[in-house]
Length: 544
Image (cartoon, rainbow, N blue to C red; front, side, top):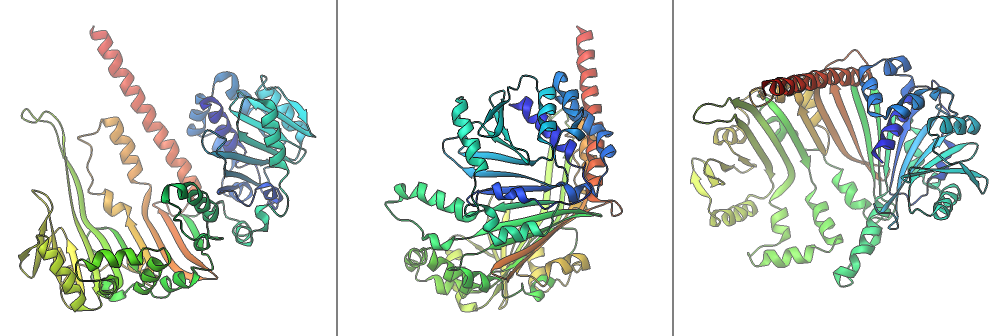
């Protein structure tokens, strides 16, 4: 199976950039509407961003060729551009729940063809052991008992094998080609919207199908108790990614059920509190996560899922309830990591191994709504063992580490560093403000996350605990990305919206070219690592 997986991977990369114009992927009609996951690769879009000879001439591509058995590697490459594959199109892979398969999923790939005869000729040349037969106007064959293929004049379908019985697999292939319009994913307007956007890469996750399957499977073990299927009816997650100059962008949409749309709309109404964000120190900031969670929506969610009563029952033993807990906060919160450093100490006579030391400042802040309610929660924490210190409290968590809790009428701050908690509580008087890039990505959304890759890795030193070869690979990786930004949570057109950007240090080239260059540099570093390891082995052998 591994052998053919490598061949198919090489084949996919080979055809990835052979096209230059777009053809509507009509073959998506063969994707059933109850597919759990659908992934698409828009070859037409990608081909405009990278040239064929840049792939085939790269070291990373040649390394992949080496991993394919020699008797197949060159054959797979020979004539791929004349194999009858319609590279002016979109390739799809979908997963469909099916317990008859060993994995519990049927994995199916859809590859458009423009010349079925050319495909068959290519297949027989590249895989001479394949026995091609005809079944119900389809050509079918099996590869080493691991993959089953069927095709007509327009489409090649590849799926994992159900059984060794050729008749069973032929029937499965018939069914794969017999998806009716009513049962096709084309009838789903939200999936069509995703495909109409023309992203380089796309993914569709059918939560309705996944949750229904899981609920049906678990119900017998829950004494007949199960969640209402209306909660996830027609819910789905759609995302599309694009390789553009200097970054990879992603647009994500979560389609909610009608029974839950009011709750999600409430979640997406209010942005995270800007004044709270301004309290986070920008000094050596590695990561910031901020969110506004509507307490009303949280309570409604608990009620809809049937846990509100259980929660109130449990809290009543402490003399409180869900309302009292939720009313203590506005729903605004932020989590930050500053001053992250990883240092290493080489082995010594006393300690015969390298040591790694990690230091960081971690903070969590919440905006208080009703101080009396918050004080009640603090009393519970005091009874659990919190100790007074300065203007707050300390909770030991290990022999060396503690969590400090400081609060005033507006905020509660939790941190592993007392000085940091105090600084946030008093409005970041002693720290640097967030830089404009971080602030712009975090403010103005119900949810946001920012990870500064360069700020994080510049104080990570692993050289003394890594081999020189591994250190070389790590150092190459350090120069790839600058930051990752994710924000969203707004509710629009019956769905939660979000956007993501993975930003590269190279701002001048398309991100897909940058990734190719990175892959080649990593390949070089790995080659040097293998050569060094072999040299060590040779030296050891000669010593004997």
